[in-house]
Each structure stands twice: as C-alpha cells, then as structure tokens.
Amino acid sequence: MANISTNLLDVILSPAEQGTIQTAITTIDTTLDPVEHTLTDEERSSLLSLDVSNKVFAEQALEEAVNNGSMLPTAVNTTFLKNDLQLYDQLDGIESQLENVLRKVKDAKRVAGHEAYAMSLTIYTLFRSLAAVGVAGAQQSADRLGERFAQNGGGAPKTDDQNSNLAS
Image (tube, rainbow, N blue to C red):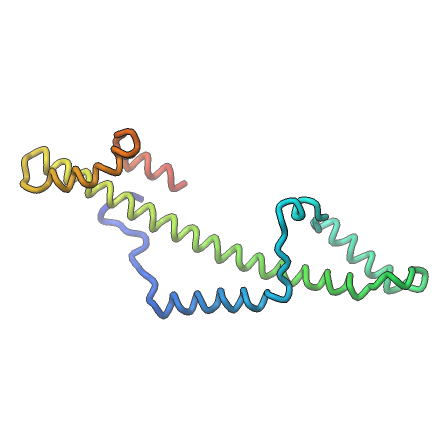
C-alpha cells in the first residue's frame, strides 16, 4: 500500500458532508435519549444477556404467558416483556447498522493514517538522502523530521514492508 504514486483515499469530506454526518449522529443520539440507560462496568457484567437461545426462550415465555396468563400472578406484566423484546429487536438492528458504519469509518481512518504516515516516512527518507549528498537546507528538514524518532530512543522509522504489515 505504501507507494508514493498510489493513494487509495484521495478525498476529504466537505464541510457540508461533515455537517450532515454530525447532524445524523446528533439525531441518533437525541432520539435514543428516552431509551438511554448508562451502565457501570459492574452493572454491565451483572446483567443477564439475551443471546439467540435466551431470546427464543423469552419469546416462548411471552407466548406461554399470553396464552395461559390466567395462571400467573397479577404482578406479572406481559406488556413489559413484549416491549422489552420489541425494543431489543429494534436496538439490535440499529446496533448492526452502526457497527457497519463504524467499521467503514475505522477502515477509512486506518487507510488514511497509513498513507499519511507512509508518505511522511518517504519525505523524511528523501530529505535524509538529499542531506547526505549536500543539498542546501535538506539537513535542517531531515533534523526536524528526525526529532520524532529521537523521542523514541532514536530508532529508525519502520520500512515500507514493516508499515504494510501494520495495516493488516
């Protein structure tokens, strides 16, 4: 992927596009306010989960409660169960869509970051090469860019082959 003549993402989001995305995120966030229930890590780990088999069980329990509810105490409110199952399904669909969008954002961010860093390493290497053959002013640029590596123990930057391994 690290090739100075190839750039997989040569685009930026316009201010209007950024605004559209931010508005959509705000709309989702605001719309979810009534169902928001922020949990602590302890609360999150203490709650039962509704995997596929547990969901089937809950649906069967609702069906039995509706069909044979006269045997249950009046404190059992099947509407709560029905609403919880419906909300679970709705949120499951939303979660899936958001995960797909988030994967796209993360992948595009990863590619953009990779390309930016790979091109930066190429520029640094070129300034070092120019400085080595005595091109005026190149050493100052190489030194400024080299400060990034001096902060990390002075190690050399990763090569293009090492960088391409990071993208996988």
